[in-house]
Image 1: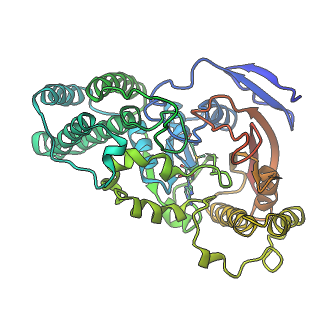
Image 2: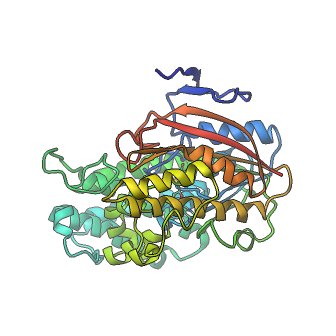
Length: 439
Ligand SMILES: C[S@@+](CC[C@H](N)C(=O)[O-])C[C@H]1O[C@@H](n2cnc3c(N)ncnc32)[C@H](O)[C@@H]1O
């Protein structure tokens, strides 16, 4: 039995190496944190802890999250008085992060919302049509029409209200609000990480207008408080790109004072598959409106299992090693013992660590000496073998300019936040917090 140290809401700054916490909390969604579901989201307590520990009472520093996802680090950064930079390869996550960290003009938001509420009731049909042949599998006709009306109205905002920055920010907020209701009004199972219509679990989809209005009220209230609370001079920059290449160019000379992130795990989450129904309705904004386009994008994600056979045609873990004995041996075991998937699984895992190595090398070149880098990562199970990812990443970071200073863990609880990997991508229900310092 795993022994946990219970802490209530606040994580102590000094944690002995190897400790595993059980963080008891009632609130994981203050401020703008709860705007949109996102797989693999971590609890705000982690970035809050890192900021408090390494930036203390200082203000106006710059915090980077190179795998920012839905922006948990970025929101915490801004509300504690810092500039933030987020990078993510996933365009929906970039839009979510932008919206969650951008204050809005609340008077204009009220005006636009009133217009939307009024127009929704008047319109019977919208112009917008998703480019999906099997749309009736995912949505009833009535829901389809209502979603089309909402999306059409959001598209009309610049024509009715003008296209200045403040209006554009509110339009983005409405898009995220719209996106956040789609899974719940669809026929797809609400809770599964993958998007599918269950034939055993009966679902009654929510009514779109009611849910959208409810969500818009919630989001408006939260963004109003956020906008009043934060220092408007702070900058939030979110970049849609990969964190394995050309990081220096992307960061454009910004001095980074602290890095807090959680990279993907091996073979754990198919982000695009998770967002499939949302992408039918807003994917056109990112060129991801069709399944063909979505599938092409999947290869860009670290840890993905969507790789072309051509890419690994010549790979074997015997001729291409990662120069970490235990890791190479595990890859060789999978390769030889798992007759069905070993070849592919070994390559997926090899590529994961190669990509993470590229990331460490890139980020090391952008950080000044003694800058802290906090990484949250979980171990995984591949072809029945446990990969202690965290320990391997420590070795990879070490040979790419980082000194490892601490490792502690916490119990994963909320399956809507960190996904419980028991019996799927892995067995471990602990996230490890790795503390590195740029050498
Ligand atoms: C575990 S999630 C981060 C979740 C985030 N901490 C949050 O609270 O929402 C990992 C993120 O890494 C992103 N990612 C995957 N491959 C990437 C790459 N090559 N470059 C940048 N981001 C990548 C995924 O899109 C995903 O959003």
